[in-house]
Length: 313
Picture 1 (cartoon, rainbow, N blue to C red):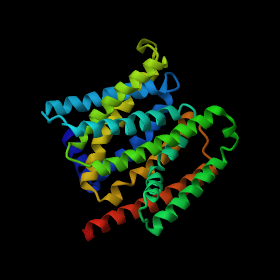
Picture 2: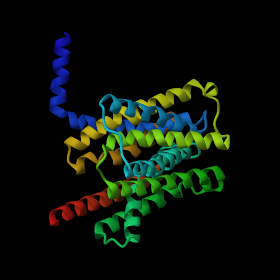
Picture 3: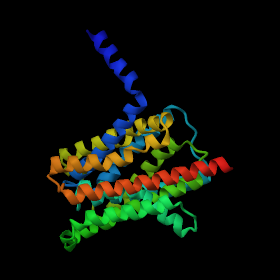
Picture 4: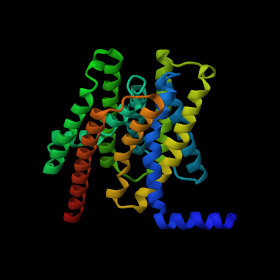
């Protein structure tokens, strides 16, 4: 019986393809991390949650690469890792986690998806010429943002809501700068070991900040529900799903492996409505769809531009 089940599962995996299954895993579970963050920050300081999550996740990565006897970074590599830890994890991950304390997880996920728009805007200010499709995608996505926020006009009267929106947007901007900095410094050092070091260093900085500002709480006073949320974020947000993401990137074309970015917000919005009874109406559905359509145009244009630049070199 066990052999029959094993053979049936194996045949299904072969039929669908392990890389596609890995992409499905990424698309779903990274969407659920917004829900876990939302639940966790209900019961503890958001930046402390981010610090604990990144400390555990970073430690696991570092232990793995130490076991593999991976060489440590040298010289200027440490500077790059420190800058990326601040941009990607202290600011981007920390602020996005803090943001969902004041806004819905679905809205946080939709805002989190606009990183490519910042990359386009930053590229414009840097004097780079952009394809017409990228500009059109930028305009389309901005229209979608207007539709989504039209439903939240009254919420802007609330200081907490405005603050949540502000720090969530800043988190996407810092991730965009981190992405461009990674591209500029891309490199010599193992990127996955670098990821673990970035997470670990960011946790030290966040612990220092929350301790200095008196915003942390004793570990013994953190309720079990928040520890479960942290565990979920570490296992599914920082370890297993990232492994699946790397596998999908290595085995699928870029235009397919990037699909997860369009599915994550949809998962977060639907689960937020089901679990937390968050708003799911026509404005969010239509606006979110328009934003994702614009993002697809932007991403497609950027990928095409990179491919053309490689061909002409």
